[in-house]
Length: 229
Image 1 (tube, helix red, strand yellow):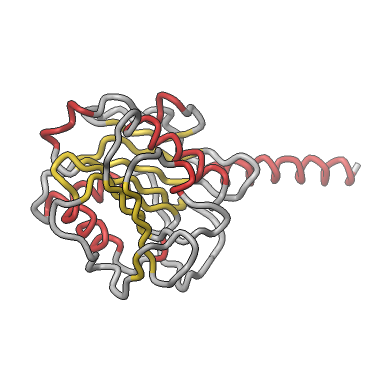
Image 2: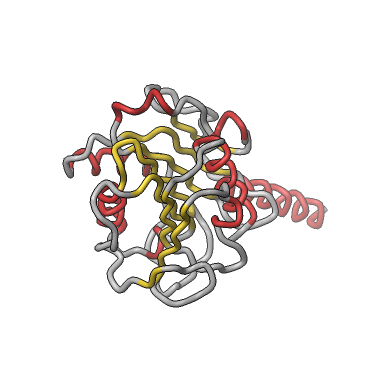
């Protein structure tokens, strides 16, 4: 798990679950690859790691990602980091997350908005600023009263990844319980959305990669002009 994914995951636990104990947390894609969300989660909760293979950080090995081995409305929080891009039908996985959640349960998703082709065992998708709204609308179309609490694109530091981060609530009637946002704590993001607002905070059109490419092209052009003199 890369540095910014760990940082955003830690912020989620700190903001949405601070001082809460006794929760059941399910981590989809939980095997420890250079770190895991469990290492930044809060203690005194029942943390269950789910993945396809036996590995460090995995408590339950599954065969079907679209049929999670949990009862309806039995889980408090579902988290998934660096996994959705590897799911062929991530919208079906999203519905499974909603199914197993209690009405006031939360979903945290971190997935790449850019980056290299990396197969574990497949690599299918990248997620952009409107992806969270699309998932919210898909959940509602599927019969859930779910709502997007926030989403944004994280700014990369020294790594190649820009993270798409989104937090969902299974039933909008419980939105009053969650008033703070990751965006309020970690300012290194663009194209942020927040519950009950149509405003896109820190709106930008060119991606961070595109901006870097334009700067590099300008430098190369300037050097070429000097060389021609």
